[in-house]
Image (cartoon, rainbow over all chains, first blue to last red; front, top):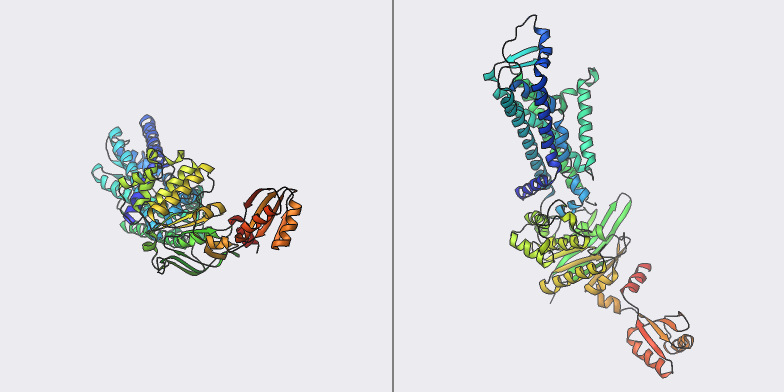
Length: 280
Length: 304
């Protein structure tokens, strides 16, 4: 029954026009970034490298597919949660708003299975969005700009990663990015169980992300104890794969915290949905 | 022979905050019944039905369907129940056929595509199978709702206000569909409605519920015949006719409506005698119409 309803949920997602908004918006945004970098990428990169030119000499093609893919990832990981929440925030509350929740919950399928099937369908949708992001960011960038060494500017300074040492980093970075986006999807599904309309959970998800991000970026000691446990603190941990050496311990810590969030949020959703009187 | 009990509700209660929606409601539905669940808006009908379908958790009381506790055998029981709760809502962006496929997959039975198309034919939507539900009228959605309830061939069908919002033609169509289910497929049907005529025409047994309480339960025939009948009489001189009826029959209640019309509460068995007396007394009897139907019984029961 769980598999059958997951299939049902995927059909519903595929049949809704809003599900394609994410893919469409992603394609357009990446197209704009690639166009902008093609037109003016060299001057943008030279602006960054100019501060190092007194101590370092840069040779070769700096504006390459790897750099563009990294820039795209950095820019879009902030916006993709909205595109994910647009679909996943509607999964339970949308049924309540439409009235179909009555039909669904009066069938011989447990409420736990209903929640889990929606979670699996949401996870598959998030996976498709992440894969689409990967295809556009990595493969299209490589196709347009060619390949080359990756220059990454982080808090410790400038890191140059050789061309042969990059693809696996992108692979693992997308896995962690997927986990971050899945946490957002699970949060919006959870909020969806508390609402009777679609807009509330979507707005609430974004509000939580913004509030947590602000708390995480505030240099105030009172928040220091909670910062490590906010999922937003770990949403950018994919970037750690582009450090040298890769801090695998930190990444594993982030993975554990994101997974803990997912399990907790799914648990809360199941508990809430099982207790819920369906009166809509 | 003892009848098989399909639904047994005992002392069901449900509160929403401080509001008691259902108070100690009990009733029994037997196999093959078209059971009317009658009550005014806000009486607690939908809450009771939602409890029967495990959409709402009751605060107390017992619900048994097919002789098994709903609480302990939810999935098994619901696989043998088809339902429409208030208006049937579907995924508007999907076709009628796709909607039925979705509900068939989680109905607990293997329903083939051929059976889905046959069901759409049964409810008169065969030619609209591929059309998106967003273009359907309310009546078409109701018929699709009935198709959805029948997909997995359930023994019990629960219909909550199935004719609400329908035009007269739509009401007749749904009513005929329900009668076909009873007559051709021998389904047990729980029909909730505030449309008194609907219950009177379709149901064989009923319970009247008001302000969360079950007031009376029994067969429709018994409940309607056990009381006196209101008869409206049109004669040439209503005033004299009232005096004659009072003298001869001493009715519980008699009212002169106009110079030519009167209404009298009288036992149904005495109506022929009353007619005879009026004719023998020389009154020109233009019409005699029994008015004592479910509507009067319902209002009287609720008021009492």
